[in-house]
Length: 86
Image 1 (cartoon, rainbow, N blue to C red):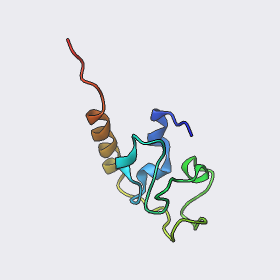
Image 2 (image 1 turned 45 degrees about the vertical axis):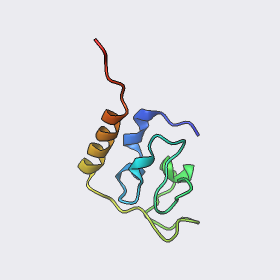
Image 3 (image 1 turned 120 degrees about the horizontal axis):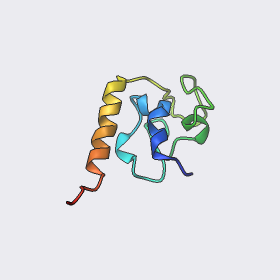
């Protein structure tokens, strides 16, 4: 599954308290509900995960403060962006 980096802020998963922000550099996205990988249907907002989904371990979307999510993303980006050399 190929995902553009700029789409990350648009995914509802990024604002869920169960999303694992530490796995952004991997080949997929994981969370407590889907430790082996979030299904594309949920990831791309084709399914409203505020309701149960097969295999979600009885864990559904719960929002967190979006400012916290963005700050985590920016922190990740800062740590993983090569420094410019003069």
